[in-house]
Each structure stands twice: as C-alpha cells, then as structure tokens.
Image (cartoon, rainbow, N blue to C red; front, side):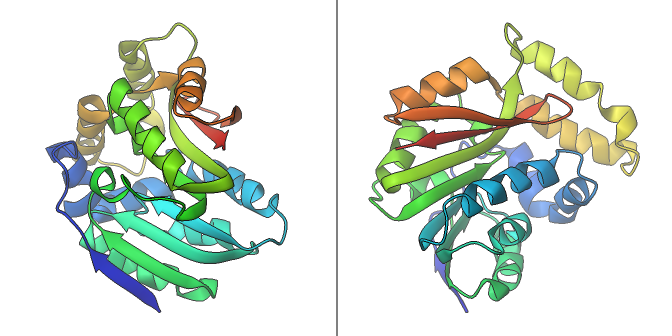
Length: 244
C-alpha cells in the first residue's frame, strides 16, 4: 500500500502552461506517452538497464516529478528496488501512481507538492534518483542549485539519472524550438488544439542544455562522474547519469 503525504502547493516556477498540461489535462499527457512522441520507451528502457546493472543489492529509489509512475513502475520491474518514493504536484497523477506501483512489492511513499520545495534539505534518502522531463523547466543557475540538492539527497555510491531536452553542440534554444516544431507532422494522433496546448507549454517553459553543459552542471553540483547514456532518435532528448 502506498503512503500519501501532502506538501506545499505548486511552486511559482510551475508556470500556468505546465499545470495545464500535467494537472488539468493529464489525459493529454498520457496520449503523448502512449504514442511515444517523446521517446519515453527508450528513456525508461535506459533507466531499467541502469537499475538492473546495479545487481541484486537493494536500493531506495526517488522519482522526482513522477506523474502517474506507470513508466517508472515498468522500469523497476525485475530490479532490487526496496523502497520507492515519488513526488508530484498533481493529485490526479498520484492517485494513478498508487495503483501503478502496487505490484512492485516494496514500500511506496507518494508526496504531493512541488519538487523545488520537497527535495531541498533532504539527506541520504535515496540510492538512485530519477527525474524525467522536468529539470529543463528551470533556468541554468536554478538547475545547478537543484542538482546540488539532489546530490545531498543521495547516499554514497548513488546515482542521479535525468531524461531531458538536449541541444546539439552550438545550438541555441530557438534552434531547438524550430526542431521541435518540425515534429508536428509525426504527431498524427493529435488535433491542432491538442498540439497547440503541448507546444505552447514547450515554448513557454522548456530550457534545454547541451551535453557539455549538462556534464558541467553535474560536476559543479558535486558529482564525481557524468555520463551521456542515450540520445533519442529525434535528437531532441537525452538521458544523462551523474554518480556520487
């Protein structure tokens, strides 16, 4: 059974477009995932490989901005997870997460609130931290500050994995947005209003970084090693790993 904890309301950094996509219209986000438009299958497959690569030693897993946790629950199957903690500001998503995680066979804690409020001042609460498509909502100095908080929340020998928007070398945000807009023809399951809702959020709230910058932020945050694990076929997203 999952334990639910309530926290602060969504932080001001969770802009109106983010709330609209991930709370008020959760079914729209599920449509994105089910059609694999953001390459969730590949990203969470990389997460599963990283978790099984840890061997059979039990580990504590922190899922930041976990959403309905369906993809994380799948990635955790067959691993030695002993404790799952998920955080999200969407009540609806957490209700779905409780059901999705019920079959893991480990203790589950779900915390409602914004990760900018829930993660700071935590110490040694996880062996692995995962954060999917959420850190890019912060500006670069805030990304660094938050990554330092994650570093403190990790046990010795722990890892922080992120699935994030990634720029090509020498590409700027406008260039990345042009490549995003070029994806419209492949989103065949979406009507124009649905595409406009998602794309409005992306243009308003997404701030991608190059692989070089993600690695630099990891080292400045106190991680001893940064690795580029995966780039998606669209080259819009990558998975990175930072080890303590």
